[in-house]
Length: 120
Image (spheres, rainbow, N blue to C red):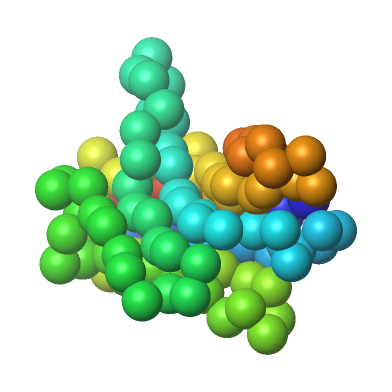
């Protein structure tokens, strides 16, 4: 499974961005997916996650009500709509996918990350 993020950039506080994560390879094996972020000097943290069918989502408290995660399995793409951005949302955002191989072992896959910078 290969994951490629896009959509990051520089935005003013209060603005919006939409991140995309395109999956390729053994996409049929992908289960849950999620977005993580890592700010300088901080640990990587979960921002939002979504189940395989998209029926259930989970958000970090700091982004609840402002961010929306979704996925289009027909396009093998996951999205993160980010509204009302704050300077503290500045970080590298990573796409994550959990996939089960033929050996029934679940593995984590990561994208290369996309930078989001929110200016005050």
